[in-house]
Length: 107
Image (cartoon, rainbow, N blue to C red):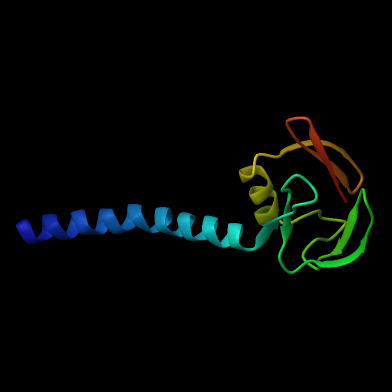
């Protein structure tokens, strides 16, 4: 009888710990995939995005994971939110993100 109780408790512990551990791993993987942009208020930029054009006020990247029709991937939105940026107005593919008095236009 005691053996069954122990097995049940162990099963519940595993069932509760699995999503928690998975969430922590997902969180750290997401953070690893993005780097803070030193030029633009530490706004996260995908590590594998290719810089194609830049000037004093803007940088243009090519990133195959972002599709204009669908926007940016959920994981990237999550990282932006984790870094304290708030999603603002949206106009077509352009989305404004704010953090304090800083604004980033993401297209």
